[in-house]
Image 1 (cartoon, rainbow, N blue to C red):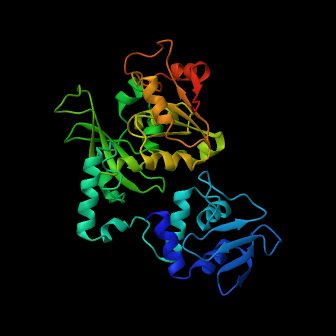
Image 2 (image 1 turned 120 degrees about the vertical axis):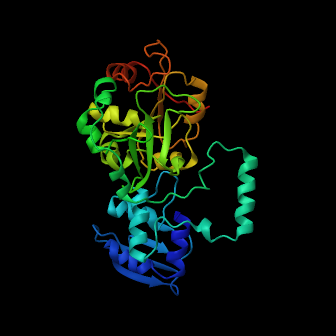
Image 3 (image 1 turned 90 degrees about the vertical axis):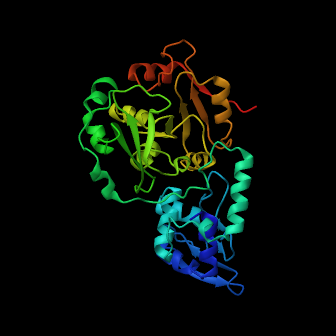
Amino acid sequence: MDAKCIKEFIYDNNHVEHILIELGMHHLRWHNNHKYITCGMPDGDNPTSTTIYNNENLNVVAYTRNIADNFGASDLISLVCFVKKMYFSHALKWLCNLIGLDYYHSTEEELPESIRWTRMLLKMQSHSDDDDEESTTLKPIDEHILSYYYQKPIIQWIQHESIFADTQVEFEIGFDLRSERITIPIRDEIGNLVGVKGRLYLREPSDRLPKYLYLEQCAKSKILYGLHKTYEFIKQDGFVVVCESEKGVLQLWSHGYKNAVSVGGHKFSKFQVEKITRLNVDVVVAFDKGITEPDILQECAKFLDCIEVYYLMDKGDLLEEKESPMDDFDKFQTLMENNKYLFIRG
Protein backbone atom coordinates (compact mmCIF):
# COMPACT_ATOMS: atom_id res chain seq x y z
CA MET A 1 0.00 0.00 0.00
CA ASP A 2 1.73 3.20 -1.12
CA ALA A 3 1.48 6.60 0.53
CA LYS A 4 -0.71 8.11 -2.19
CA CYS A 5 -3.36 5.39 -1.82
CA ILE A 6 -3.33 5.68 1.97
CA LYS A 7 -3.82 9.45 1.82
CA GLU A 8 -6.66 9.09 -0.67
CA PHE A 9 -8.36 6.56 1.63
CA ILE A 10 -7.97 8.89 4.63
CA TYR A 11 -9.50 11.79 2.69
CA ASP A 12 -12.34 9.77 1.13
CA ASN A 13 -13.34 8.29 4.49
CA ASN A 14 -12.96 11.43 6.62
CA HIS A 15 -10.27 9.99 8.92
CA VAL A 16 -8.22 13.19 9.37
CA GLU A 17 -9.69 14.26 12.70
CA HIS A 18 -9.48 10.73 14.14
CA ILE A 19 -5.79 10.50 13.19
CA LEU A 20 -4.97 13.89 14.70
CA ILE A 21 -6.64 12.90 17.96
CA GLU A 22 -4.61 9.67 18.06
CA LEU A 23 -1.45 11.70 17.48
CA GLY A 24 -2.27 13.82 20.53
CA MET A 25 -2.87 17.04 18.61
CA HIS A 26 -5.02 19.46 20.63
CA HIS A 27 -7.54 22.26 20.08
CA LEU A 28 -8.80 20.78 16.81
CA ARG A 29 -10.99 23.22 14.91
CA TRP A 30 -12.44 22.98 11.40
CA HIS A 31 -12.59 26.04 9.13
CA ASN A 32 -14.24 27.14 5.89
CA ASN A 33 -16.73 24.27 5.66
CA HIS A 34 -14.20 21.53 6.53
CA LYS A 35 -11.61 22.66 3.97
CA TYR A 36 -8.87 22.72 6.60
CA ILE A 37 -8.36 22.08 10.29
CA THR A 38 -6.09 23.86 12.77
CA CYS A 39 -4.62 22.37 15.92
CA GLY A 40 -1.65 22.43 18.27
CA MET A 41 1.34 20.09 18.51
CA PRO A 42 1.27 17.53 21.37
CA ASP A 43 4.26 19.20 23.04
CA GLY A 44 3.27 22.78 22.25
CA ASP A 45 0.90 25.36 23.76
CA ASN A 46 0.00 27.18 20.52
CA PRO A 47 -3.53 25.97 19.60
CA THR A 48 -3.18 26.99 15.94
CA SER A 49 0.45 26.07 15.25
CA THR A 50 -0.49 23.45 12.65
CA THR A 51 -2.86 23.50 9.67
CA ILE A 52 -3.95 20.35 7.84
CA TYR A 53 -5.70 20.79 4.50
CA ASN A 54 -8.57 18.40 3.86
CA ASN A 55 -7.73 17.29 0.32
CA GLU A 56 -6.23 14.20 -1.33
CA ASN A 57 -2.69 15.42 -0.66
CA LEU A 58 -3.41 16.16 3.04
CA ASN A 59 -0.85 18.98 3.02
CA VAL A 60 0.33 20.23 6.41
CA VAL A 61 1.71 23.63 7.35
CA ALA A 62 3.53 23.45 10.68
CA TYR A 63 4.42 27.02 11.65
CA THR A 64 6.58 26.12 14.65
CA ARG A 65 8.18 22.85 13.45
CA ASN A 66 10.06 21.64 10.38
CA ILE A 67 8.24 18.41 9.53
CA ALA A 68 9.12 18.24 5.82
CA ASP A 69 10.87 15.06 4.68
CA ASN A 70 13.90 14.84 2.39
CA PHE A 71 11.64 14.94 -0.66
CA GLY A 72 10.17 18.26 0.49
CA ALA A 73 6.79 16.78 1.41
CA SER A 74 4.96 18.27 4.38
CA ASP A 75 1.80 16.23 4.73
CA LEU A 76 -0.10 14.10 7.20
CA ILE A 77 2.39 11.23 6.80
CA SER A 78 5.40 13.43 7.55
CA LEU A 79 3.46 14.78 10.53
CA VAL A 80 3.05 11.21 11.82
CA CYS A 81 6.79 10.59 11.29
CA PHE A 82 7.61 13.77 13.23
CA VAL A 83 5.22 13.33 16.15
CA LYS A 84 5.68 9.57 16.58
CA LYS A 85 9.45 9.73 15.76
CA MET A 86 8.91 6.94 13.25
CA TYR A 87 10.61 5.85 10.05
CA PHE A 88 8.40 6.43 6.99
CA SER A 89 7.37 2.77 6.56
CA HIS A 90 6.46 2.47 10.23
CA ALA A 91 4.32 5.60 9.92
CA LEU A 92 2.45 4.06 6.98
CA LYS A 93 1.95 0.85 8.96
CA TRP A 94 0.69 2.84 11.98
CA LEU A 95 -1.82 4.66 9.80
CA CYS A 96 -2.99 1.44 8.16
CA ASN A 97 -3.57 -0.21 11.53
CA LEU A 98 -5.47 2.84 12.76
CA ILE A 99 -7.85 3.17 9.81
CA GLY A 100 -8.29 -0.53 9.02
CA LEU A 101 -6.14 -0.98 5.90
CA ASP A 102 -3.83 -3.86 5.00
CA TYR A 103 -0.33 -2.39 4.85
CA TYR A 104 0.75 -5.09 2.38
CA HIS A 105 -2.27 -4.77 0.10
CA SER A 106 -1.34 -4.06 -3.52
CA THR A 107 -3.63 -1.82 -5.55
CA GLU A 108 -2.11 -3.43 -8.67
CA GLU A 109 -4.27 -6.50 -7.97
CA GLU A 110 -7.42 -4.39 -8.31
CA LEU A 111 -6.63 -3.13 -11.82
CA PRO A 112 -8.49 -4.61 -14.82
CA GLU A 113 -6.58 -7.45 -16.49
CA SER A 114 -6.18 -5.42 -19.71
CA ILE A 115 -4.33 -2.65 -17.83
CA ARG A 116 -2.12 -5.17 -16.02
CA TRP A 117 -1.18 -6.73 -19.37
CA THR A 118 -0.38 -3.32 -20.84
CA ARG A 119 1.85 -2.47 -17.87
CA MET A 120 3.63 -5.80 -18.16
CA LEU A 121 4.36 -5.22 -21.88
CA LEU A 122 5.69 -1.74 -21.16
CA LYS A 123 8.02 -3.15 -18.51
CA MET A 124 9.29 -5.80 -20.94
CA GLN A 125 10.01 -3.12 -23.55
CA SER A 126 11.84 -0.92 -21.06
CA HIS A 127 14.44 -3.65 -20.33
CA SER A 128 14.57 -2.51 -16.71
CA ASP A 129 17.08 -4.18 -14.38
CA ASP A 130 14.49 -3.94 -11.63
CA ASP A 131 12.06 -6.38 -13.23
CA ASP A 132 10.48 -7.27 -9.90
CA GLU A 133 9.97 -3.71 -8.64
CA GLU A 134 6.28 -3.47 -9.51
CA SER A 135 5.44 -6.97 -10.69
CA THR A 136 6.27 -8.63 -7.36
CA THR A 137 4.33 -7.59 -4.29
CA LEU A 138 6.13 -7.39 -0.97
CA LYS A 139 4.14 -9.66 1.35
CA PRO A 140 4.86 -11.46 4.63
CA ILE A 141 5.27 -15.23 4.53
CA ASP A 142 4.60 -17.80 7.24
CA GLU A 143 7.12 -17.60 10.09
CA HIS A 144 6.81 -21.39 10.44
CA ILE A 145 8.92 -21.72 7.27
CA LEU A 146 12.05 -21.05 9.32
CA SER A 147 11.43 -24.24 11.32
CA TYR A 148 12.19 -26.23 8.15
CA TYR A 149 15.83 -25.20 8.36
CA TYR A 150 18.58 -26.43 10.66
CA GLN A 151 18.94 -23.69 13.27
CA LYS A 152 22.52 -23.56 14.48
CA PRO A 153 25.44 -21.16 13.87
CA ILE A 154 27.54 -22.13 10.82
CA ILE A 155 31.09 -22.89 11.95
CA GLN A 156 32.53 -22.01 8.53
CA TRP A 157 31.08 -18.51 8.74
CA ILE A 158 32.62 -18.03 12.18
CA GLN A 159 36.06 -19.24 11.08
CA HIS A 160 36.33 -17.86 7.55
CA GLU A 161 33.84 -14.98 7.31
CA SER A 162 34.11 -13.55 10.85
CA ILE A 163 30.34 -13.74 11.28
CA PHE A 164 30.19 -14.61 14.95
CA ALA A 165 27.72 -17.04 16.53
CA ASP A 166 25.74 -14.37 18.38
CA THR A 167 25.29 -12.43 15.13
CA GLN A 168 24.06 -15.55 13.35
CA VAL A 169 21.55 -16.15 16.14
CA GLU A 170 20.46 -12.50 16.05
CA PHE A 171 19.74 -12.68 12.31
CA GLU A 172 18.31 -16.24 12.45
CA ILE A 173 20.90 -17.81 10.14
CA GLY A 174 20.27 -21.50 9.44
CA PHE A 175 20.98 -24.30 6.98
CA ASP A 176 18.85 -26.05 4.36
CA LEU A 177 19.86 -29.71 4.09
CA ARG A 178 18.07 -30.26 0.79
CA SER A 179 19.82 -27.53 -1.19
CA GLU A 180 23.00 -27.51 0.93
CA ARG A 181 22.72 -23.77 1.44
CA ILE A 182 23.12 -21.41 4.35
CA THR A 183 19.74 -19.78 4.90
CA ILE A 184 19.35 -16.03 5.38
CA PRO A 185 15.85 -14.96 6.43
CA ILE A 186 14.87 -11.73 4.69
CA ARG A 187 12.77 -9.34 6.76
CA ASP A 188 11.44 -5.96 5.72
CA GLU A 189 11.94 -2.81 7.77
CA ILE A 190 8.74 -3.56 9.69
CA GLY A 191 10.34 -6.85 10.82
CA ASN A 192 8.07 -9.25 8.94
CA LEU A 193 9.52 -12.29 7.18
CA VAL A 194 9.20 -11.71 3.41
CA GLY A 195 11.66 -14.25 1.93
CA VAL A 196 14.54 -16.66 2.53
CA LYS A 197 17.83 -16.50 0.64
CA GLY A 198 20.16 -19.46 0.36
CA ARG A 199 23.96 -19.18 -0.02
CA LEU A 200 25.93 -22.09 -1.45
CA TYR A 201 27.92 -23.93 1.23
CA LEU A 202 31.36 -25.53 0.63
CA ARG A 203 30.79 -25.76 -3.13
CA GLU A 204 31.91 -23.55 -5.99
CA PRO A 205 29.14 -21.66 -7.80
CA SER A 206 28.42 -22.47 -11.46
CA ASP A 207 25.73 -21.91 -14.07
CA ARG A 208 23.82 -24.80 -12.52
CA LEU A 209 24.61 -23.86 -8.93
CA PRO A 210 24.52 -20.08 -8.44
CA LYS A 211 26.09 -18.73 -5.25
CA TYR A 212 22.80 -17.21 -4.13
CA LEU A 213 19.31 -18.61 -4.63
CA TYR A 214 15.99 -17.54 -3.15
CA LEU A 215 14.48 -20.52 -1.35
CA GLU A 216 11.42 -18.36 -0.64
CA GLN A 217 10.92 -15.65 -3.24
CA CYS A 218 10.55 -12.00 -2.30
CA ALA A 219 10.48 -8.59 -3.96
CA LYS A 220 14.23 -8.14 -3.53
CA SER A 221 14.42 -4.64 -5.01
CA LYS A 222 12.01 -3.40 -2.34
CA ILE A 223 14.23 -4.56 0.55
CA LEU A 224 17.02 -2.97 2.56
CA TYR A 225 18.30 -6.08 4.30
CA GLY A 226 18.99 -5.62 8.00
CA LEU A 227 17.12 -2.33 8.42
CA HIS A 228 14.70 -3.80 10.97
CA LYS A 229 17.74 -4.40 13.21
CA THR A 230 20.02 -1.52 12.26
CA TYR A 231 17.63 1.46 11.97
CA GLU A 232 18.17 2.82 15.51
CA PHE A 233 21.97 2.50 15.15
CA ILE A 234 21.86 4.26 11.76
CA LYS A 235 19.98 7.21 13.27
CA GLN A 236 22.33 7.22 16.27
CA ASP A 237 25.51 7.19 14.14
CA GLY A 238 24.22 9.60 11.51
CA PHE A 239 25.25 7.50 8.52
CA VAL A 240 24.48 4.19 6.87
CA VAL A 241 26.93 1.78 5.22
CA VAL A 242 25.34 0.21 2.13
CA CYS A 243 26.74 -3.24 1.28
CA GLU A 244 26.12 -5.42 -1.74
CA SER A 245 25.39 -8.67 0.09
CA GLU A 246 23.56 -9.60 3.26
CA LYS A 247 26.80 -11.17 4.44
CA GLY A 248 28.40 -7.72 4.63
CA VAL A 249 25.76 -6.53 7.10
CA LEU A 250 26.42 -9.58 9.28
CA GLN A 251 30.20 -9.11 9.17
CA LEU A 252 29.96 -5.48 10.21
CA TRP A 253 27.45 -6.29 12.97
CA SER A 254 29.90 -8.88 14.34
CA HIS A 255 32.55 -6.16 14.70
CA GLY A 256 30.28 -3.56 16.27
CA TYR A 257 29.30 -1.67 13.10
CA LYS A 258 25.54 -1.98 13.47
CA ASN A 259 24.55 0.77 11.03
CA ALA A 260 24.60 -1.14 7.73
CA VAL A 261 22.08 -2.41 5.17
CA SER A 262 22.35 -4.49 2.01
CA VAL A 263 20.70 -3.93 -1.37
CA GLY A 264 21.38 -7.46 -2.63
CA GLY A 265 23.54 -6.36 -5.58
CA HIS A 266 25.46 -3.39 -6.95
CA LYS A 267 22.52 -1.46 -8.39
CA PHE A 268 20.00 0.59 -6.44
CA SER A 269 16.34 0.23 -7.31
CA LYS A 270 14.11 3.29 -7.08
CA PHE A 271 12.49 1.75 -3.98
CA GLN A 272 15.86 1.30 -2.27
CA VAL A 273 16.93 4.85 -3.14
CA GLU A 274 13.72 6.19 -1.60
CA LYS A 275 14.08 4.09 1.55
CA ILE A 276 17.72 5.10 2.03
CA THR A 277 16.89 8.76 1.40
CA ARG A 278 14.12 8.65 4.02
CA LEU A 279 16.70 7.61 6.64
CA ASN A 280 17.88 11.25 6.48
CA VAL A 281 21.53 10.37 7.17
CA ASP A 282 24.78 10.34 5.19
CA VAL A 283 25.31 7.34 2.92
CA VAL A 284 28.53 5.33 2.47
CA VAL A 285 28.42 2.98 -0.53
CA ALA A 286 30.69 -0.04 0.15
CA PHE A 287 30.55 -2.25 -2.95
CA ASP A 288 32.84 -5.18 -3.73
CA LYS A 289 36.21 -4.97 -5.48
CA GLY A 290 35.69 -5.12 -9.22
CA ILE A 291 32.85 -2.62 -9.43
CA THR A 292 34.32 0.27 -11.40
CA GLU A 293 34.32 3.84 -10.16
CA PRO A 294 32.11 5.05 -13.07
CA ASP A 295 29.56 2.36 -12.17
CA ILE A 296 29.58 3.39 -8.52
CA LEU A 297 29.24 7.07 -9.44
CA GLN A 298 26.26 6.18 -11.62
CA GLU A 299 24.56 4.60 -8.59
CA CYS A 300 25.46 7.53 -6.33
CA ALA A 301 23.86 9.89 -8.85
CA LYS A 302 20.47 8.27 -8.21
CA PHE A 303 20.22 10.13 -4.90
CA LEU A 304 18.91 13.65 -4.52
CA ASP A 305 21.29 16.35 -3.34
CA CYS A 306 19.51 16.55 0.03
CA ILE A 307 21.91 13.96 1.48
CA GLU A 308 25.66 13.49 1.27
CA VAL A 309 26.77 10.31 -0.47
CA TYR A 310 30.24 8.82 -0.03
CA TYR A 311 31.74 5.72 -1.62
CA LEU A 312 34.66 3.43 -0.84
CA MET A 313 37.12 2.97 -3.71
CA ASP A 314 40.15 0.70 -3.31
CA LYS A 315 42.64 2.75 -5.32
CA GLY A 316 45.63 1.16 -3.60
CA ASP A 317 44.70 -2.49 -4.36
CA LEU A 318 44.20 -3.32 -0.72
CA LEU A 319 41.43 -5.79 -1.58
CA GLU A 320 41.74 -9.04 -3.50
CA GLU A 321 39.82 -9.50 -6.75
CA LYS A 322 36.04 -9.53 -6.05
CA GLU A 323 36.71 -9.18 -2.32
CA SER A 324 34.13 -7.30 -0.29
CA PRO A 325 35.37 -4.41 1.90
CA MET A 326 33.65 -6.19 4.79
CA ASP A 327 35.46 -9.53 4.32
CA ASP A 328 38.42 -8.24 6.33
CA PHE A 329 37.43 -5.77 9.03
CA ASP A 330 40.93 -4.26 9.26
CA LYS A 331 40.78 -3.50 5.54
CA PHE A 332 37.31 -2.03 5.95
CA GLN A 333 38.55 0.34 8.64
CA THR A 334 41.51 1.36 6.46
CA LEU A 335 39.20 2.09 3.52
CA MET A 336 36.84 4.09 5.74
CA GLU A 337 39.74 6.18 7.02
CA ASN A 338 41.73 6.67 3.81
CA ASN A 339 39.63 5.71 0.79
CA LYS A 340 36.18 7.23 1.42
CA TYR A 341 35.30 9.74 -1.26
CA LEU A 342 32.50 12.30 -1.36
CA PHE A 343 30.33 12.02 -4.45
CA ILE A 344 30.33 15.38 -6.22
CA ARG A 345 27.35 16.01 -8.43
CA GLY A 346 28.28 17.42 -11.80
